[in-house]
Structures are given as C-alpha cells and as structure tokens.
Amino acid sequence: MRIIAVMAQTGISRSTDISANLARLRTRIATAAQAAGRDAAAITLIAVSKFHPAEQMLPALALGQLDFGENRVQEAQGKWPPLCAQWPDCRLHLIGPLQTNKVRQALALFDAIHTLDREKLARLLADEIQAAGKMPDLFIQINIGQEPQKAGLPPGDADAFIARCRGEFGLNIQGLMCIPPAGQDAAPHFARLAEIAARNGLAQLSMGMSDDFELAIRHGATHVRVGSALFGARG
Image 1 (tube, one colour):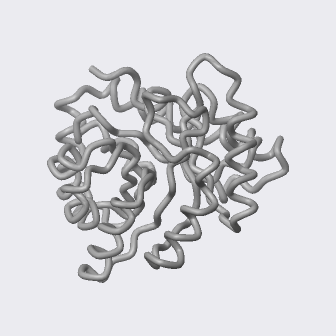
Image 2 (cartoon, rainbow, N blue to C red; image 1 turned 180 degrees about the horizontal axis):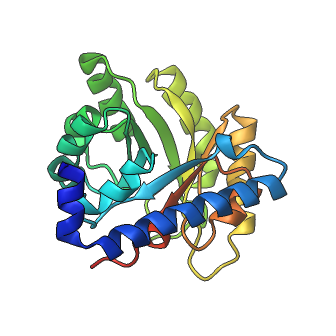
Image 3 (cartoon, one colour; image 1 turned 180 degrees about the vertical axis):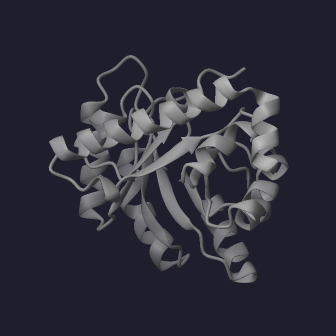
C-alpha cells in the first residue's frame, strides 16, 4: 500500500517511464552481452540514483532492481535507510569521491565502494573495516585518461597500489573503476582498464554509463553505472 500511495503522489506516468526504461536497459544489456559472447547474468546494472528523490526508486525496486549508486554519503544517508528496511536485499554502491572524514559513515551504509584512489583512504578504510567487522567490495578508481581535474590513481601507479592494498592493508579489492574522458572514444580506455585488471587478477570492472555501457560490456564490464537512461534528467 505504501508503494502505491507514493506512486500516486509522484504520478503514474513517471512510474511507468521508469519501469519501461528499466525493461529497455535490461534488454540492451542482454543484447550487448550476447554480442560479446558473455552471460548477461554476470553484468550488474547499477541504477545511479544520485540527485533523484527516494520515491523515484520505488518502481525500479518493485521490479527487482536492487543495485543503486550514490555519489555522496550524506545524500545516501537521508534517502536509503527506509528503502533498505523495505528491501533488505538491495545493495548500495558509492560511486562518488569518498572523503576521509566520511569513511565510517560510508562503511555503515554501502555494500561496495568504487572510488578508492589514495593511500590515506586505504589506511582509513583498513582501520575502520577492522573496527566495524564489515568488509565491503572495493574498487580502485583509475584516472584512465590522466585528466588533472578528475579523481583516480594514475594508470602507471595501479599495480603497486593494488599490491599494497591487498598486502599491507588487507583490503578486499574486487576490481577497478574508471570514467573515460568526455568527447573521446572510450574503447581504448576500457581496454586499458581491462588489461590492468587482468594482470592483477581482478575480475570486476566498473565502467560504462548511459552513453557507452554497451561498449563497456564489449570490453568486459561487470558493473555498468546508468542514471539518465533510467531515471531521466534530474528534476
């Protein structure tokens, strides 16, 4: 009843749009996976819910979409606890930069963090994980285009940092994440991320967004982060 009431408040057409968008995305992911000779079940759709209100999550949750991505710890804290209480199987992914003073709060809320990119953050995560007894999936963010305005580790530093995170810090490094430069062909950047992951024995690749997730799947993406193609533009 609660779901129906909130849908009525936000408008049936909006709910229908999100439901239709989700169906189209699932079909596109399946088609891209088949074309790449991959199993679509091995690809996780992360619905990027940042800047969208909680009620817009309901149609997707009702249709079994359980993985969601948020950019900011504070926004997620204000939105997700009631939703997670209703859908305890949902998984939250932090896909925006993690400030060191938000590590404890992030660990309490998120199941995966995609933006580990520096030693200080790795140390703090290791300490807080030990204290909390909760080990999220961790992705190291690579600044694949080496853009000065973007967060992420330089590609040339990736191997040493991965080894240190695993060894010295004992972190559960599952994979790598990247955001290719805007306006460039993303294919070589996706390919390079896949190469770094392969030589370090990492099976997970968080890459691809609304405009290029099919290309990312072709290059081995296991997690695609899609917002506007699902929820539309903010507002």
